[in-house]
Image 1: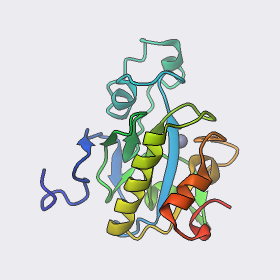
Image 2: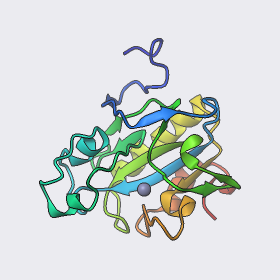
Image 3: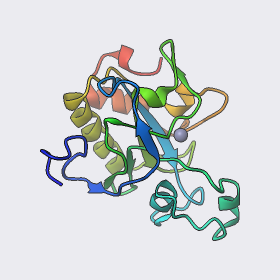
Image 4: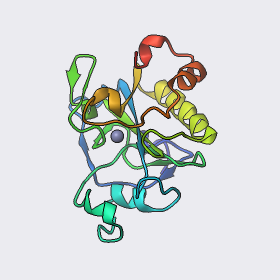
Amino acid sequence: MTSEVAPHWLPGVRHVPSPNFGPRPDPTDISLIVVHSISLPPGCFGGGEIEALFCNRLDWDAHPYFQTIRGMEVSAHFLVRRNGEVVQFVACDQRAWHAGRSHWAGRDNCNDFSIGIELEGLEGGLFEPAQYGALVDLCQRLARRYPVRAVAGHEHVAPGRKADPGAGFDWAQLQNRLAWPARCFPQ
Ligand SMILES: [Zn+2]
């Protein structure tokens, strides 16, 4: 794919198209980045299960944990692996299914106007330096292409229902390295 025919797929990252998306109500309204964490099964890193889940190819019977998420049809736009590799699943102008019931800055349904970035990790656990580097680079690239005005965690847009990425994620480091105004981050 070239940038001319697929302008909403970032060049230089691996593309693994997911079917779990739909149209945004306003394709030009891409104003929020939602940071998540995921690992399958929780705490296991490096396998192909996340990509399989996002592409509806996960073998639900392969692990007892997978029974608890059987049938889920979800995807984020991006995944940042532990080694900093970035995978894109959904074009940025499309609405990926990552935040669910959610609310941010007076608006419901964050999927409508956000880009979802999953960090491979355990909710509440620490993340790798390579992941912060890749996340900073990704946020900067997205902010050059889209009118992104804020970054929040899933825990901030769905409080009480979701807790990722959790206490192990270093928001101060992200804010310092991006050098965006404090109002762009969870308070
Ligand atoms: Zn999440």
